[in-house]
Length: 134
Image (cartoon, rainbow, N blue to C red; front, side):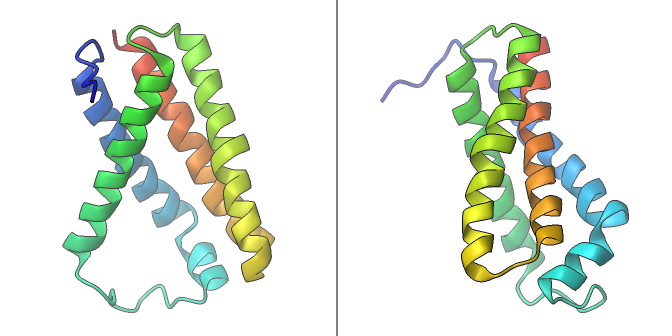
């Protein structure tokens, strides 16, 4: 297995952390109530599982996604390309994959727009961090 030592590992970790900052804003003050309503959840109910497990799994997934995107971009991507590629990956791969699942699960368009929008911005943010931080 190739470790990709030429990648900026600190930028990859910061990109993963940025997903949490964005998520805190996106699923907090911006769309918490709309997302909970569309997902059929009570926004004031205590979490069903331990929050440490939820956040731990989410961070590992964000770190793997940031790493994979960094491998795709290469060690010193041009910022415009990296941001554009992030937007395209988020909108055309991730959000469209959600659209397929949400169509079969009969979830609402609003829920898809919230979740797809988050992941589109997540990967565009990854692109900005990885593109500008060489």
